[in-house]
Length: 102
Image (cartoon, rainbow, N blue to C red; front, side):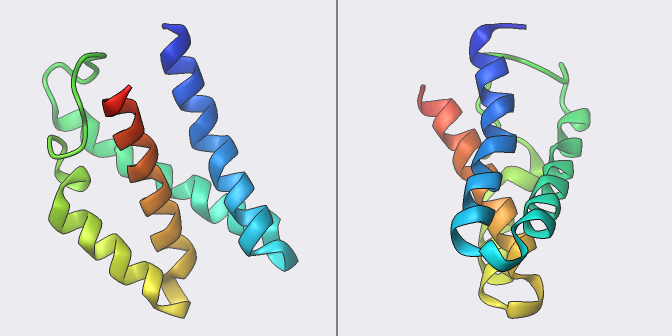
């Protein structure tokens, strides 16, 4: 495992924690846990061959990392009942996109 992949994984935990602390402070712990649970979206990586390719950009490749899916996540973020899930998924996609750029 490379340093970049370790940093990427740490960001997948730290950034949702920061978002929870900044925007959902009254219930930041539960908000953080919900956003951490959205990391299960990466189960779609199991459909790829190979499952892990450090040179592959997941955005647009994995089924749950495509533009239509991301639009759905944005819609979830707009609804109060599903806001934490939507925000967690959008944070995840933003971090994966940043990984593609770097």
